[in-house]
Length: 447
Image (cartoon, rainbow, N blue to C red; front, side):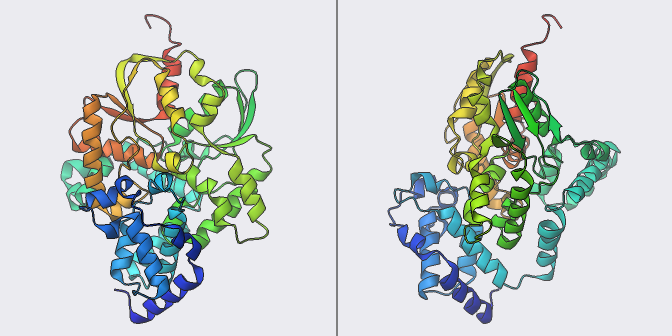
């Protein structure tokens, strides 16, 4: 419950810090409504639409309403997918407004002791510290390989977890050992005559839980003609912090990353996670009020490219790529499409695979319901959105669902598990599928 004192503080900060001109840019035209998953899945509740949320923010600034639990609930329910931005005729930067509002609310609202402790562990103790991320992931790997996982499932201990967490535990990737996690490269040469020098943003989850996908990414870049620099002082991108009302911590991580990559001398900074890439491209906005860091942030953001963009630029799709015959479909990463504007490149790469019949799914660009930790904290709405997504997937008759973001990948695996399709369908990251196709095309005949 938000107290009267907290409401007063929140309202004051809304008036002082919210971008009022941006709020006024919203014409209330409603073009955003059909693109908003929470508006649709809530039964067309205006409070769960971009237009409605902007109206609530403006009403708080104008003093027409108090920043009560209903306002907070409306903002918390938003996926932050930013699908409203490309269709907005006024170009409203809804994502920036959402982050501003959440930051104000969470910094001025007294959280419960348990919630505060969990947020402190995650946002301060874990994600900014790659060594701790690797240690935690190493423990998960030990749990998977030691027999503890089988024992927990066999004895029924997993029943004590909520259903969505039980299913999530089943779809977690097999993670490497702690020794493998610590033995990471900082430089890799091109495997053909060099075309580009790139720096690789390895990320926190991507370089721990999804380390094999990072390895596949670097192999593809080497095959495409890239020298790769991987700065070891880089940190978490800060997306989870920025989206969850921890803006100051997000700024600190941004400064660390900018400093880490400035000396790389790279043509581009490459990412393989749509959510990370989108937040990295927003560093110029995040640090716009910092005279020292604003120009450095703009230079950094201008170099960010998704792996699919650089691979198509280097004509990787012209190389021999092949897979056993199968139908392939693609689930857009919201932030890759809506923020980085990368839409055609993944499809171009997938359509170039011999043996793969690419089939576009209906509403491929509608959010899958993952949205960082949304599928944990807003499980009911997340599963509603996922159920719709799986209907569209099954209509394609696809064997392989391709994604470009770790959260989307886990969410689609969760959907496959929930629908009982594990024997007939798989979900993979695009770089893992491309490496599979590259190596399959080079296998000796009859091997």
